[in-house]
Image (tube, rainbow, N blue to C red):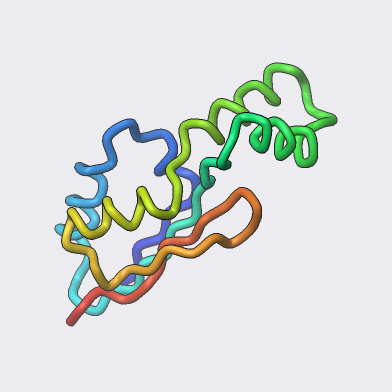
Length: 108
């Protein structure tokens, strides 16, 4: 089994049901890989990311990207979510200045 998700987590104001469902549907030994936005440390940093990666886009898209960055979770918040869900086999690492990866193999 493989569980793969891209850019879903920051849309969830309550990620608990998501983590519980992942634990329920994934077979022991399943590989898990999720990539999502990571919330920047400050609003200024979020504005800088938007300017760097979406500066040529419309004002609407820039605003949506900014809001998505602010809605995202930090790596520490995701680690706490994983611990609470009993998903201790998964690691969380920054993949870029704006993305985090959640990955690992569930215990068999």
